[in-house]
Length: 135
Image (cartoon, rainbow, N blue to C red; front, side):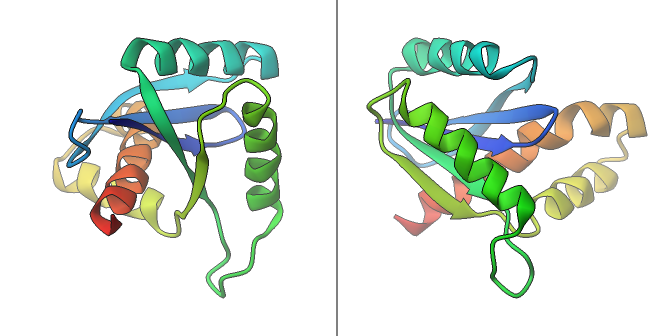
């Protein structure tokens, strides 16, 4: 059972996929957003390629647990995604995943330009791994 993990942002979507047994998450790509139709087509290609059965989307929350403006944008994006797939979409609290991704890359001594290219994919991996660890 493959599960897709998403880190949805305004300009990019970080994408991760689980292994077939659902134990580990691996970052696979970062989609540069070009419009809703393009974004949906790219995600559907990935869903088909990996035979995805479930989608986990990071839900950005404020530190006090409330859903802010960015969280509402992610919810709207996932509502649109539901129109393109019959797969269940689960929200996962993504607080501090981007911070953790940056910390790992700094420890690996990656340059700023490399970090910028990888951060969304790594954040998606953290989101999906958090969900996998919980089930």
